[in-house]
Length: 176
Image 1 (spheres, rainbow, N blue to C red):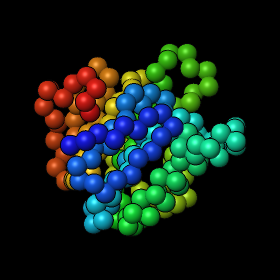
Image 2: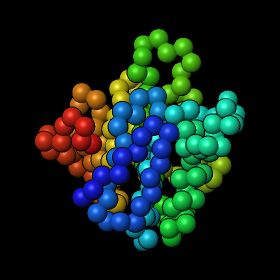
Image 3: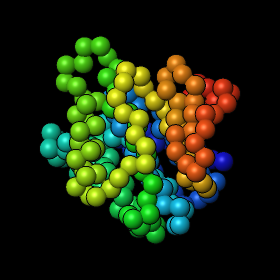
Image 4: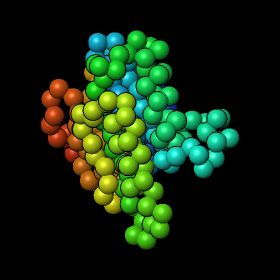
């Protein structure tokens, strides 16, 4: 299995069953994983901020940095590969408050932006792991659409898929 790393302000979409989409350290950022089980298309977005209006020029060059431009771009890339909105399974994680004195509450603002965008688009999430105080790492196996998550300092677990069960302790460190 080959890893496609999704960095901060980045997105990857694939139909290749040998790919694993992975993003690390979702603190106040949010990761959005989508999967169409019929078209076998998986996508993963790691957005940093809720609203592109704070820097429209930057959003034009990198829409994945922002919820309001990145989430639609993720979905459109998946549609271009044959995914259909009505079949998508959606998993989201992140939006934590990792610093005790986070003045701007970016994690909460990212969560709110996500919920507004999904609601307006008529998209329901299968599972949400939002908030808290710890960062998360997630990965998706494109062959099955299963999403695995690791919370900083905790054990990894299967976060979504046909058989939700805790994973073995061997999945540690930067594995999700």
